[in-house]
Length: 237
Ligand code: ADE
Image 1 (tube, rainbow, N blue to C red):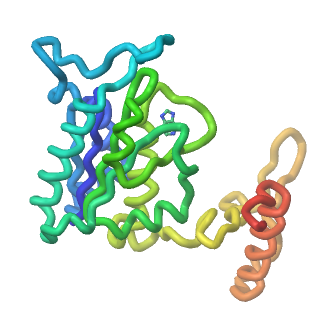
Image 2 (cartoon, helix red, strand yellow):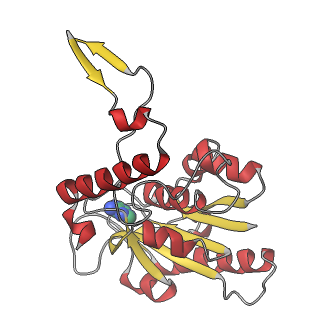
Image 3 (spheres, rainbow, N blue to C red):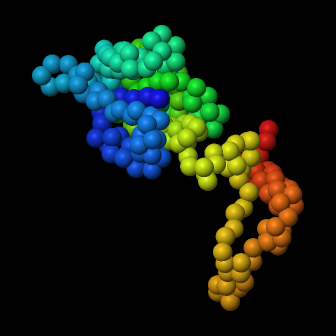
């Protein structure tokens, strides 16, 4: 069984999200153990302080390295004890920031190989730089700034879990979809065969109605390539 731990100042939010969709299903099937770790528990003093003002001045607050690293160390110790392999070789500690490598489907596939994924999500202005020495990698989910790493950690968890064997049902496939071979998905159609609207008739492409599997496959491949070339030429490069 895999283990996903998310270190966060909003454990209730992360926990609640895991009660829905693919994460909930993976938990129910005992394919993953999912835990939200409250970073506040590692805060200092009576007030459980986790952040402070930046040295050198400036707006906002910065998460303290002592607090964040304590949370990471405690979490990685517990995770590796829980996993059958005690060597910790199969753990990955991932920091979520807009400065990380852009996350994509290849990263998702790679991350399925680890037994323990530990996500570190911050809030406010960011992490003290020294935190970076204690993580294995840093990922971003896109070139925009969110208020924290919780959604990115959940996005990545979902993308990884749906690739874990057994998580998707037998009628669902993880590989005939967009990005599985660096192509966007082909156009899909269902009933009705003729969709009449605004005095127009929108028809399903004929080839899909023929039952000729080889022709359908060929059409889909071509449409995938056309669509990728037009919308995401960067994927073909
Ligand atoms: N934290 C804030 N914005 C983020 C982003 N785009 N990706 C990952 N973590 C973030």
